[in-house]
Image (tube, rainbow, N blue to C red; front, side):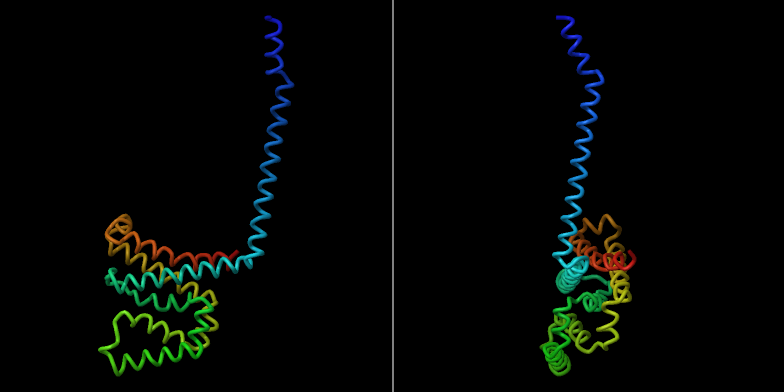
Length: 212
């Protein structure tokens, strides 16, 4: 009985056990490498099917545009501050998705712009305050020279403008809230802070792609 138990322990702790352990570890490493290769292939296929990195940039531009519109809505409802929220107008101009931008640059946008101008000039009492910012965006988009509309919008200059606007609004919001922690605790600070932080996703991503 003692000899049998000693032989069993020798099998468990001897060179054969070490070889088995090394073989099992090698097998696990090989499986992990296969999983990594499969993940890289999946990512590559996703980029190909989605149009590559350009698809990600367009998607993030939509998110940034939606965040700017969200902040504009907050500004006209319950986010009353002394910040220059009018800076969201050029931000929306630079992040406006191409489909909407082409629509506003066409005849539809021109007709909307002229209606806005007529209402503002001749019927100011019937011109609601909440329409001022959207009207400014439509006017800016419809009449912007080709230098801004066709060149700077898709250039690093436009990206830097968006980044500077986001930095300014974030710093002013933190100051108005009394500190970084209060910006995420006070009243509607959480929703406002998240909306401002979302302004960074497109310009940061676009700059990363430009410099890699």
